[in-house]
Image (cartoon, rainbow, N blue to C red; front, side):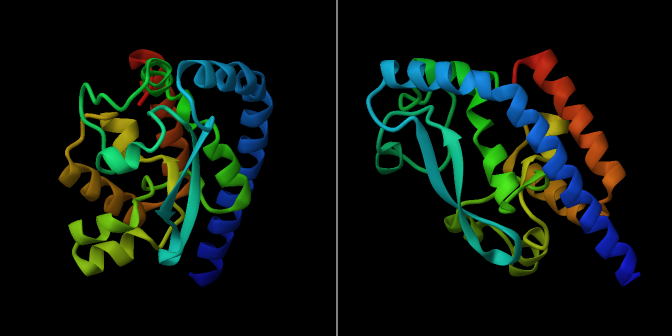
Length: 194
């Protein structure tokens, strides 16, 4: 059984690297126009780096295109709400189309994240979990997309997201990853992002 799990992890990592390199090649032409639009719309850095919790409970700096005003973390919490005044005009567009997530492809290449897995939490969210659930959730690399994003987009409640994340960890397989990637593409194309 141990050999099967190791092969599965190796195949998942190989899939992550190959798919990420292809996605980066396809999306790189968008990086410069997005960077210019973000800078024109709002002063501050083009990228947003936030400490998130990864596999084994280690922390890493997750990258995104900045969609909120500079210093948004000091103005509000770690989650946004509908009509959040901290979100910029360009930010509303890149969030709706999920273009703000593109820099996370670099996190996948660095090995901090995977294409598929539970969305990475900020450290303060540990208080929202039972200790055993927090430990289970972080047995895998966090993902750019996960079961909750693929099935419920941004409509899942926190409890539903937690349950789907834990379900993913318990049932993970390459086949499930491929289905989640397909479901995510359908969500993005049909509803304009996740």
